[in-house]
Image 1 (cartoon, helix red, strand yellow):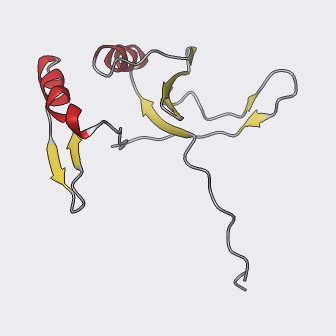
Image 2 (cartoon, helix red, strand yellow):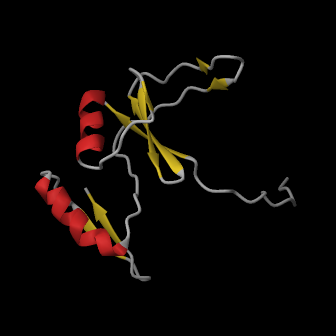
Length: 125
């Protein structure tokens, strides 16, 4: 039976997660290409602040067991992901050309571009 109650409002997305087969290469990419510095990291993951959200990058196969946090803070359930993943990063419109030049300078190929009806542009790399 369907509920007559509506879901309470959400406050936004707090974390986005990507998974990698090569953590060393991923960390180098996020630092060199995106200019991100990890807030936290260990052998399983890196956590990058990105505005009001956190981008988490996990080593594939290292998140399949529950993690018990210290000081009775709680637990994090198992998770994992594989295959092609997608993440959208916001940049100011006036920075688009500078980002395209930076990506080219870093040897990062733009695989796709979309101009959306309301004027925004997506670059896929």
